[in-house]
Length: 366
Image (cartoon, rainbow, N blue to C red; front, side, top):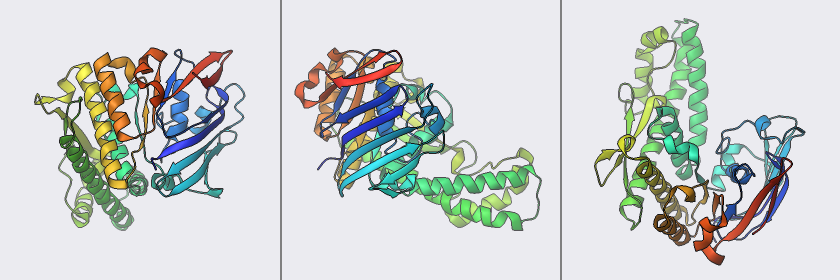
């Protein structure tokens, strides 16, 4: 049974006062004018993955305006291990509460239920902007394979924040640092291992597939000194670097200083130097490779969220993308301004129209 949502209901979520969809495992093709609320549906689905969703928005920012009453998203998820009811609720701007099968659950638990990948227009500049966005992209890839990656990242970030506070306060007593550096070394080594293992899986999935999209050669690099190999070596490097870090007021070594380098493999050209169209094609290739690798590993393709992806592709490449999604057997949620962008799907997809009137989004079958 493919991983998919069979129901999705939104209440006071962004522009949607209320929206409800009954679904099957087919892809979902959503069309409507700009600003109607198409992307808001995808954002709601992105919450079924650990983290803050594809827009990284706070719970308060998601609430429909001007009421700001709070919001609720519910979904019936068909997963390889069975059926699950998942609910997200935020009241009065409070952090969202997650319930799985009527039981409170941490967000990290979602990674063991559903795998959700997304490609949104903001990612088009991935290769030419700062390293932070590429690390975030890489960590989403790692999380898709290793649900425990989220716990390691949270542990590392908290310990590093506490260590940075000591550095800024010019605390010199080593006893204050040892426990924090031990946590950072343990979590940081796990983060690095997960990232490298994820890249290996992506590489295999790209090399072993016949696809219309170009292969992206990926390499994990460091913006500073190379990351020491092993937990003990990283802990020692953190201890040795306290003086330098204190002068800088922050930690200068660790997986938070990593970067992802991409190369258009067939041309040997750095992704940052490729054309805008080539950069988009490389991103699509990576998302598809990630999905293929997950399908092979867990037995089910992930849910895909592809926001405005068709608008940037010519008819041939658009048809190729749709054929690859169909071959994956993935429930892909796709948005576009007009129904003609999804005409190639026919009845292979569920077609939905989103309109807007007086600031309220309306969702109906197309």
